[in-house]
Image (cartoon, rainbow, N blue to C red):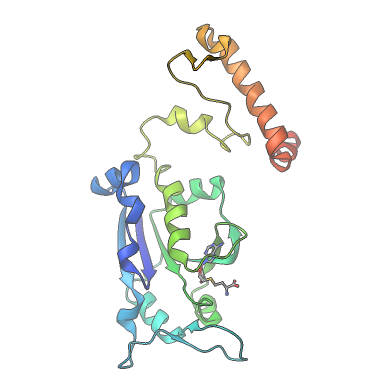
Length: 226
Ligand code: SAH
């Protein structure tokens, strides 16, 4: 997967994506990033990238002509996304869709965001990582890409652990335990030590359902409707 990133803070990338699973995959060229500094396309002597909003109000807006030049410098036919609290809320199923894309461009906003006309010109889709306001799109994109990169088919070694994790089947994950079998007087559930795979699978499914029912009634309702 080839990822273009448009940002005013190029030094924030790859950031946490340079470590662990994503970092190894980057080193092995299983995904690549091309980071573009939007400020390089500013034309005035102050290198300004923002201006006051028409209609008044607080804050600044990213200038259309600067962002447009930045986009034009790299854009081919790949889809363009803008990280924005107004966007469709990112989910595990969207992560799977992105993981199978060959190429995508992401714009990280700052200030009050970007001029609406750029969104219209490039038919940009907005993506939110949740109902809260960050000061910039960079942490949102890092979070989103972390979820995407681990799902790239060649990146995740053990496909089994993908099919069992939270959200993959519409449920939250069952409790996990590792050695020792008794820790500070607390025992691991007997069934997990039994070696009986069918019963273990049944117990895990039951625990997944109970946890989803209690913690996320919204997910449980959707699950029951399927
Ligand atoms: N004025 C905007 C918020 C701007 S926040 C509004 O009220 O909707 C500045 C930048 O942070 C945005 O341009 C966007 O790129 C990023 N951002 C903030 N919250 C985000 C979220 N929940 N998801 C994705 N990006 C977000």
